[in-house]
Image (tube, rainbow, N blue to C red; front, side):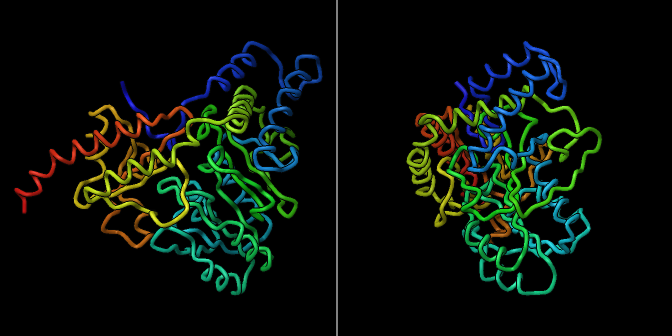
Length: 374
């Protein structure tokens, strides 16, 4: 029996999301049409918007549906540029969807450093905001590799005082920890359905009253004129169903911190380094490194043992490369050797135990080779 511990890459679709999507696929109707079928589709769309908006505590009109978290992040950054913000303060451990867009948009980029546990340096932020120029600050709520939760609300206070724009990538946090958009003091916030048990290919950008979105896709007037194109209604309805399932009842992932910590205790006793160990983290994410044991080899051996995990982020077209996040934490020596295990709504305690068994067995087979080389 295989064990899937790569939820931070993509989560299995929840049964509730699948059922909701199938029900919509069995009907016809464009949400922009005025006939009965169109009105029914519009009703489905707006009910879904209400569910997603409730996830982060905003009014439904604050939510713009997109093709995923990547597009939501890009829409926020390009909107800030259009609003004449003229520089970007970019978290050193941001996801590539934010990192690459920030570097490609044509604005000067300053890298916002983190400490040894991957937590953003607020003193640096305060000093950076005091420099000339209107700043867009980009800080993810929870890191996709380490699970480290950032001090977003504190950063928001500083950014607002400096009349800046705070964009928050909350893709990994949604459905795993509570999110209050107002308390975070964010201006924009990105979400993605498939990280919490919805379908791939759909996400949302939440925008506060201080943010003006600049349309990137032109055509019709869908999404209140913010994003042209017929809405992906089955995907959006599946997104909403996953949100309701994540919010409405206790799931196994809520017990994951104890299961995850038991796994970490086992591997640490054998020499593994826990990345972000002293920071607040998502309850179901573990990032470890073992010196001189390449990440791709660990992933392969775990896979051969029936446990599916990732080496760092899983958004690089299947390529394994040293973790930029671990490098930013001041551990370039560990960057090629870090792996990530991440559970979710269907994960069990037995999955984490099996992962520990397989990893320790692989290590025991490797250790004689280490001694031979020494």
